Structure formats: C-alpha cells, structure tokens
Length: 95
Length: 484
Image 1: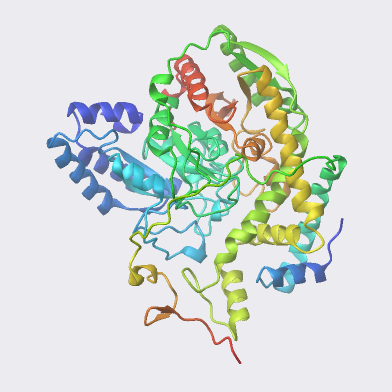
Image 2: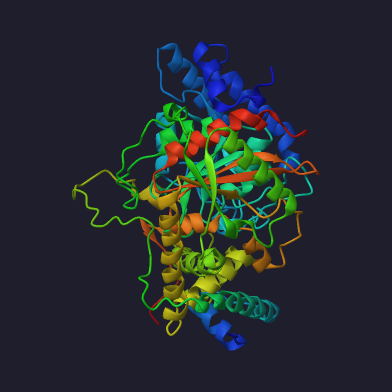
C-alpha cells in the first residue's frame, strides 16, 4: 500500500498539521514504509474475530450524580494562552 | 553512609528507626542530583524547594507519631504525570509552561502515604519513543554507558533510579515504556494489569494501553510502591474494582511446582546471543528454585508490532487533538482559527509525535478505518487469546524484555520502524492488558545490563512480584551500581 504526497497533505489537514515541502517528502516516505509494514496484518483471516478495544471487560461504570467542589475559574484558566473575563479567547470565528 | 545505594524499603527502615531524617535524606539526594545529573540529564525539573519543605513536614509529622507508610520517602515522577503546581511538560514544547492545577490520583495517593517528590523526569515527547531521544529538551544518557540511550519512554525515571538519584520513581507504559528502560538501565520496572492503577492525571497517549507503574532498584520496592498507587478510582472509569492485595507479604509465597512458559516466538531471529544466553541462565535458576519450565507458543506475536503501531497512534491522534492552542499549552498566532491550530500544532509537536498523529489520523480516516484500525483491533483479540490459552497451561511466561541491551544515541533516530521493533517483546502485554515485570538478570560483556521479563495474567501482580523477588534475592544484582 503506497501513499501519495497529496494524501499525506490531506491527512495533515485533518490532523491540523502543516509541513514544509521537505517534511512532506520525508513523512510520505516514512508513512509509506510504516503502512507497508502493517500490511502483514492482512496475512491473518480475521473475518470471524471480534475486535478488542479495551483490555478489561468492564461495562456500565456508574457513579452517583452529585455536586462536588471544582477548581476555581481563575485556576482552571491559569494555563490558557489568552483569557479575558473568565473566558478563553480564540481568534474570530464568524466572518 | 552511601544512602543512594539503599533501596526504598531500607531507606524507610532508617526513617522509621529515626536513624535518618527525611530532610537529610532528601537534601543528600538533591545534592547528588545537582552534582551528577548534568552528565545524565534524567530530570527535566528538580523541585528542590518543595521537596525540602515536604521532607521537613514529614519529619515534624513523624515526631507527632505519624506512621504513614511512605512518610518522608523521596521519589521521582515521570513528567507526563500531573503534580499540582509543578511544570508537567511531557517533554514537549507544547506543554513547556504547563502547570497542572490538580494532582494525578497516583500523586494524591503517594502524598497521602507521605512521599516526597524530588522532581520530574525526562521522557520521549508524550511518551512516544523507545530511547528518550524524542524529548524536545534534551536526551537522557544511560548511567552504565553515557554514549548509550537509557531506553524509553520512561528513560529519565529509569536513569534516575540507576544513577542513585532516588530509589524509586513512577513511569508509564503504553508499549514497554517502563519495562524497556528498566531493562536498559539495570533496574526493576512493573507494568501492572490495565486498570490496576488509576490513569487520572496521566497525560493520555493511548488510553486503552497506558498504565502507570513503579521503577525501582528491587522487586520488593516495586511491590511497596504498587501497594500505595493501586486501586479503583472514581475519576478513572477504566480503573478496576478488584481489591488491592497485600503485595509485600505475598512476596514470600511458595512457588515450588509453579509452571513457567517460554514462548518460542520470543527467542527467534533478532534476539542478540548475549541476551539469549542470560535468559537461558535465568531459566536454570528458576528450575533450581523448583519451578518447571516448558516451551509454549504465542503464535500471533509476529503481528503485535504492526497492530500496536496502528492502535496506539489512532488513540494518540484522538487524544492529542486537545492541543489546540486554546485551553492550555502553546499558542502560535495564525491568520484565522484553523491557521492558528495548524501553526500551534506544527510548532508545538516534534517529529515522532507528528508521525504518530499522521498514522493514527490516516488509520481512522474515512475509507481506511476497517482496513487499519478495525483490523488491528481484531488482531489484538488474537494476541490476547494467545495469552489466555497459554495461561491455561502455565502460571508465568518468561522471556527477554528487549532484543538487545541499550543501543547508542543517534543509532536509530532516523529509522522509525527499526526503533518500533525494539518494542517487539513488550507490546503484546499492553495489547492484552496483562502484567509485565522487567528485572535485571545479568550484564553483557561490555558491562550493559540485560533484563528479564516475567508476564502473568490479569491481576497476577502478587505472583509475578513474588517470582521476581525470589529470583533477585539469588543474583542480588541490585547491589551493582554504575560509576558516575
């Protein structure tokens, strides 16, 4: 399975990453190498095998819905790159 | 007295007898870190002031008959585990200035038990790597040979314990990140059963595989730390409700007649002869201890690395979507919101993290999900079933931790696939969620430590630790220290 530069660029956009031309070359080559390695999974017939998404079969983990103390807004915002009046500030979204 | 040579349990004994104060032990270790860590670079942040303050508190509290189990005991913490108010960087530019406003559950529990934290240790960025060379800040060096890597991703924690900067540390293990560095640095590392230890406050990499565990000089110390970090946590819905047994008293259990399985797939091509020879010597010791050894098969082993390098990146690409330059971490301004995201993430993440986000995003993207992510998850089932079958016949599975001893810095950085293959014997344990213990079993001709891996079924920590403990008391390799 080979991957093209255009596909890599598309995936980069989905992942919200951008690459220089040189990085794009290198990533395309490395991803192709990794994807060709994982091809070996196709040697196995898994048509009758249930997938495992979790190592332990724990289900329906509930807890009481109680009001508990939470950290103060100031503290919660203390790591934000930009904040104002108790809010996170983001670049303008609506044109 | 050379306090740095003492394991945790011995330090604790001195503290309890009043033969040393936490203040003097802590400042002694901090001084050793200050003098020697510039050669090793195990720590990203040394929290000297906080450590000394906590140590003094512990001493005062002890004078008032406080008998908490780890009172005044100095430890180091991998820098992807949140300690309130201390930088938690994940060795990433993205979180270079991040100070969590809360403690991880393991930190809360260790604080409650009285522990003192010396600082935060280096790792591969976001725990992605096998050499600690992917740290955005600096690589860590192996105390046994400074030209070599300490392994990874918990390379800082393993090197800190090996160098005698602390006798115990926490690491995290997603595909071998506790066990492989423990093996490279000649110390003990335990990857507990998935869910045995709460992941709350561990910066997420691959949530279905990540597990926190101890890195120590002795198996006994690993049992001690596990005792106080294990248990159900309502803040982690994947933490297991199983009762936490008394690991320390279980160390003495009678293991005569217990069965060890040797998976033939772990002794094939790629395994270095010196490593093979040491593992074979270890098997003779197990036989002398009265255990039986038989060959078994884990037939899907050759597919583990491929399955892992789809599942872990898929989960990572989803987990790391949170680094968007808004709530915390780096922000790089852009011409609009999307551009800000892209610039922030492209400048904040290093090459390996981007590579994994790319693989994961690709494997989860429309049209490829079934072919990659689902396929890998089905193979994960087959790998887990291999272990279930094997554990019907044997109590333990024993093999190498890594195919080679520590490799040289720079040797594998440009070849991601070769780097991934150094995890070949550790990855299956995470996919199946079982217990894996790494402990020293000898040294190579060049004087590099070689690790032995003991694997056991879900929640078999008592038995695995007991076997490890009884083995280490025969070779006593924990008495050997690197010259630094």
